[in-house]
Image 1 (tube, one colour):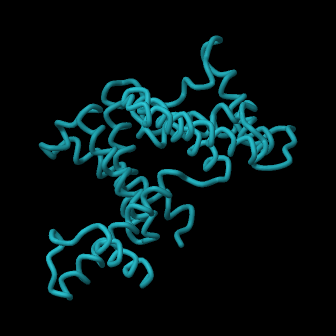
Image 2 (spheres, rainbow, N blue to C red):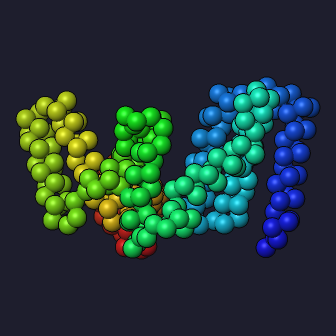
Image 3 (cartoon, rainbow, N blue to C red):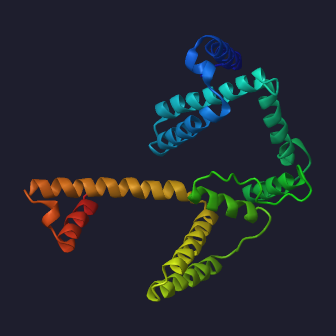
Length: 260
C-alpha cells in the first residue's frame, strides 16, 4: 500500500496530466460539462458492473476513470474561474464534518440508523428554509434507485413502518389492487397499481438492507446463465428451440437451474 505522501504525489501527477491534456489534446480541449456527463454515467455503470463481479482489479481501474472525470470537471471549473479541485475537496470535507457530529461534535448515537436519521435532519437545515426532504433526489436517477432513495430519505425522518407485518400488509394490499385492475382489463390503472406494488416491495427490501438494483441485476445475470445453459442443452439434444412448447422448455430450464 502507498504511503500518504505517495498518494498525494500520485494525485498531483494526475492533476499535471489533466492540465497538459487540456492544453494540448484536441479531444480533451473540446470537452464541456455537458459532453462529459453521458461518459461519466457510463463509467459509473462500469464501476457498478465491476463491483457486482467482485473484480477488485477492475474496480481499481474504473475508480481511476471516475476520478479522472472529477478532476476533468474541476479543471473546466478552474478555467471558468468558478471553482477548482481544491474547492471541491474543501466542500466535501466541510460537509462530512458537519454531518458527522457524533465524530466531530458532542452528539451521541446508538447505531447506524441514528447516524442516517441525523444526516437527513442536518441536510434539511442546509440551504433554503422551505427545503423538502426529497429535494436532494436527482431527477435523472434510474427508477429503481430513485424509489429506494426516496424511501431512504423519508425513513431518515421517521416515515417508516417498524414491523414486518405492516410491510406485508401493504404489499398484499397493493398486489390485490393490481390483480383487480388486471381482472377488470384496465391497463392504465393496472400500470399505476403495478408501480405501487413495486414501490412497496422496494421499500420492504430497502428496510432489510437489500439493494434492489443489485438484487435485480443478480437475478438478470442468473437468468441469462440458466437460459444459455438451456440453449446449449437443447442443441446437444439436436433439437430446435423454436419447435419446443413451454412444458418442454421449462423442463430444460429446471434442469439448468438444478445444475447450478
